[in-house]
Image (cartoon, rainbow, N blue to C red; front, side):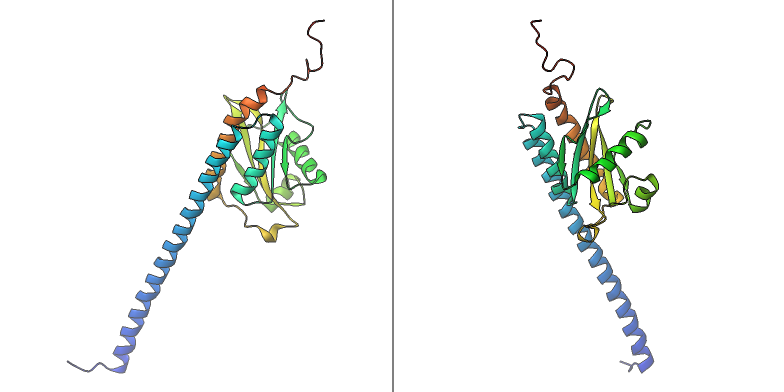
Length: 212
């Protein structure tokens, strides 16, 4: 066997190192993909658990509280809101709220009423800091994710989650790849919302004596 020169050995070593680097990148991609699939499995399992628990809710307030808490847990974000409509108008306050103060959700309400009143949001939407500032939703929000809850094209309300600017360093912002899971969760909320909504007293007849 002929002895290799130092230059030849260097070339073989460089080629081997290149192959090892490529293998390491593939291995890291596989690990990342595996972790992503694990997170998605946990997330969809949590969505199914929410669906089971939400069906057990006896009142609208209980259902809304479960929903606001669940969207925070499922997507690992800071706050959650379920804001329902009455007579095609937003209720004065959220039906369910988790992790937001009054002044923060009031800014969201103003935006929902002014910006979305004439639009037909068909599915989930992710708004980042720059978009939020342009829309003047609130300078205190770092990310807002919104889903329009509908049954047979009737808008029931909005499911919202996100992160405030103050606590943005403690949360990973959601990307477009997370929107599919959020849409699935929103669809589940929409389906389950119909039952507790039917149990809500009609403001036009609530407190009126039917015998009169």
